[in-house]
Image (cartoon, rainbow, N blue to C red; front, side, top):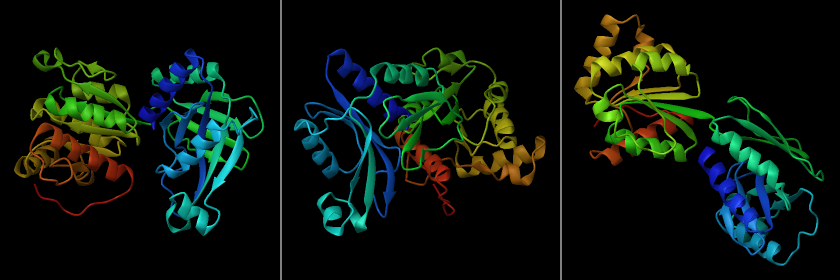
Length: 321
């Protein structure tokens, strides 16, 4: 994920500047139950320090032992497999006979990693290609529809913000919601033309867009990798964004408000805007999973949980809050 990419790349940048050697390790395939999905990666320093994760901890312990004993003599990428037998799966904490295959890069190129970091910092998606036994690593532009690919020798991983979140309203809920979404790999944008709120916006890495919400939604080009949440309680702002979002292919559209206000909003959207019944019914409101949330951080947790559920294809039952 985007934020995890940055953590690893920030860490290896520091290590490289301090003169440490390190390895990159990526999950490339799993069978059965495994603690981490393909694409999870970690950096492992020569003295055993770790950034990131490829399992629940037991595999990391074995990897640390290997790097400390200077077991990895080759500088070329190679594969490691854990959990081939039931006994080995239990030893390394892989439940239900799970198996993990890892790509190990004992000596990744520092310049290429710095370039990768700079590119994703610009909000661009990057495809990184590593080949078993080959020293060169490829970096190319990627699309949000691209996914990890591994054919046994060639590994292609996608790095950068594959998902986007547009928040309408620069209030307190947005200030909690934005960094939570960033941690989940979203590029986050906040729109609020009200100077009373926008002048105090200060969440790092989250640009404030001062245009009208409908204009901003159009300019961003809402697509199936975009979620939209309105939080202002002001129909003059929220409804403008919802009008464009509900007509778009955004995978999630939600609006803050009580159940009564949410029903009124749907009636208003159906009556005064050129929206079909199916488009109006796409609106999630009250926004967020029903976790009894009341405070801004609790509401933000509920919202990001619902967005995650929808993104992952988990449909929920009718809720009440």
